[in-house]
Image (cartoon, rainbow, N blue to C red; front, side, top):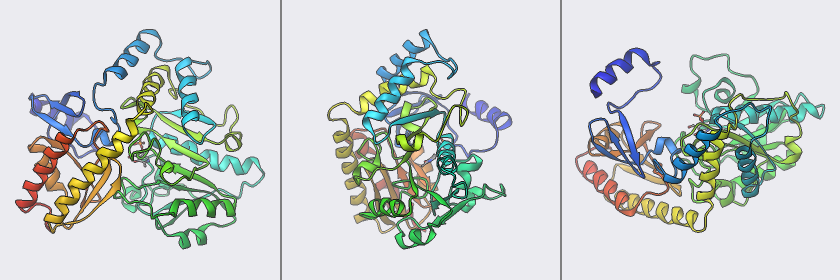
Length: 399
Ligand code: PLP
């Protein structure tokens, strides 16, 4: 049955993903089952999406309840779940206003448009350039792609959008030089995920904030991967005590239902007026009801502390592996967004883990990325570490 499904998929689905040869049909908590009945402990979580695990009963209930009442109306009308979600996001963040869309790339498109509109509304339309980071990832639509600092992702799609400059992440001097009279914003991930789980140096984000303030430039944080508790705080910027002017969210916001959001300060948000930007599905009652429940669970007493504890536990166990295996160059990351840099390629390890019942992910060819549901247990972490240990002993991960 699985073979037939895969054969059919290969004839009817666009060829944009290299998929693993399993078909998943059910999940519960941090475990997934395929169509053959095999179980997998999930350290991918739909790539940092299912932060509360699979088939969470409260989210399932919120979705079912809302689906029975109202799934969609146009944004020409008000709906309670959308307003309640925006109000809670505002309460829990630096922001005053929220624009809803459907994905991370779309949230970044909205942020790019808002930054440009902010200056054009002030009669400074020449300020349209955005400084972004090398190794960044902001999405695959043309604007988000143009802001992404990885050539391989842009290859074949020229000309990309004009107005993006790039500097190395953590290079303050380079950034200071890049900020010019035409710059409207600096866009960065507070911790780079896709680009290789790269952490900000201590005080880096605060210094970026200061540079932006001095240059009168807006600061945009892409928290699409780092947000919603992934790094042990609801938003990663909270670690540094530095808030942006605009922040983008998606991925885990509704634990798997498609949603994106762009949050901003009032003074910036005012640049948008009716007609400036829109999305048919943005903030539909169904997805916002789910996201509202997600946010309530994440912000409940003790939840973030538990994530921090489990993140430290997983990191500690990965560090133990590093002490034993010379092919592990570095373990890095924050909370439950962790990376293991290998001397050799990560792909064979990912495949071997899959065969042994673990889903893990590899970025940039040699960096294993661990982004399990935030509800992962010590036993599940120990099981993965045991599996990795055995694979390293077999010689995987060596160049
Ligand atoms: N920004 C960041 C930091 C991401 O990690 C991603 C996806 O991995 C995106 C943007 C794009 O999000 P989406 O795939 O929902 O368009």
